[in-house]
Length: 245
Image 1 (cartoon, one colour):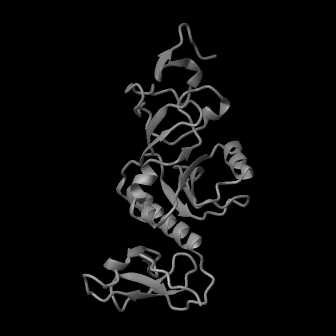
Image 2 (tube, helix red, strand yellow; image 1 turned 90 degrees about the vertical axis):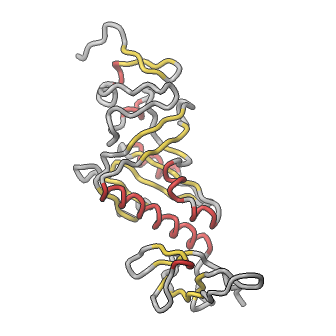
Image 3 (cartoon, rainbow, N blue to C red; image 1 turned 180 degrees about the vertical axis):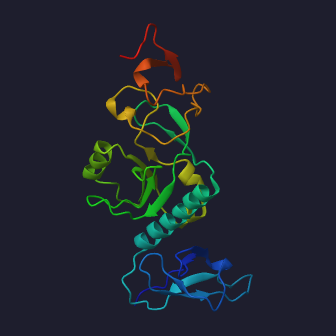
């Protein structure tokens, strides 16, 4: 006999993530992992011996896994935050330690115009795809629980100038820290310092974002002409005698 798991989050018919303590009795809720119907268990009692509000599967014989529940719940909430920022015209402030130059970068993704869950790109179906003003997928977000993206996926995104953002999760606690983990992802496949061809990828960001290492602003034309500059200790300097051919 399966043991009943106490799930803190469920989704509505409109695929909106809801915490059990904020859910209303009489409404329908579903499991983010398998889409089966959830039962809301919320007695209103508090104190010793009382159980916290939670969702449970109506059918304990289902095939839902904890991995699917955690992954999909985190993905849905991440998508909700991104869409809310897009609709309000707010920037997505992302900070990360670069895997390529080992510096810390900070960018404002204000060039994002749309986002989709599990967008079918024929060869790949990322958890979340982000689109620029021309409708091109420019960034993808993968929620990682135990299984990171395969080498083939990383190669595909790199060859198509699509920046891969990875967010690693490990437990239910991460579901209460989604925004922070989105703004401080585990890995971003892009670097602000021009050293290799990958760094010339077109990125829909504000042209005057701040380099958090030096507190200097990246030159406004750096994305278009990275060869015009050289870097030292995280700061940007214009090459002497540089001209565009």
